[in-house]
Image (cartoon, one colour):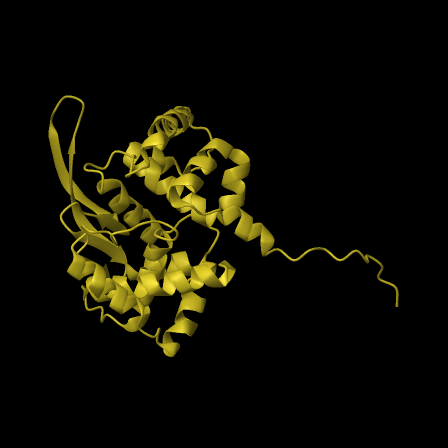
Length: 268
């Protein structure tokens, strides 16, 4: 990384975090209150850099407000905690629609024929420097913590995946991790594929069976949104994601549950 960029980011991280942003962060990023104070501080510093470097553009009449910028940045930067990061280097701009939007779709069938059409989307991640989001769905993700769905986490997981080149379900990993990552995620992806083909109910979103890139994005959502259940149902998958993200959200979630009182009497 160029020395000038490192110096600039250090200067940005040292700025005071606006006090008026904290209520928005606490409301629209439910995970924030679960983090240890050191992690909350790190997250705030990442948010400052993210907002300084990324350009937001509203579409469909949406006016970009601080709430939108802060909410998106908080969820995206959750993926960066505890790791050396270049702040999603391929992302230059974020395009935000008021709600779901219609985008062109091009698919090639097994016979090689190309089919064009349109589909309704909540978000998408381009390899040319843009992430597109539906603000309505970003807000739903924020208000429904624990649902297993989070469009910001999903699309920025794609960006992490693309940092290694093509989106193939293997982000940049420490070299010793690649073999085990390939074994565990490959097995879990094939298991999901089989279950979807046989119309079995799955804990992991069936959309993850589309390809390895979508599997990584979907399981990232699950790792942060439903970590306790993911650890119980898919322990090796959880372990690989925990090693990559260097976080243990299941432990944080369980530590936030109040201990039951030892006095169970209801005498009056």
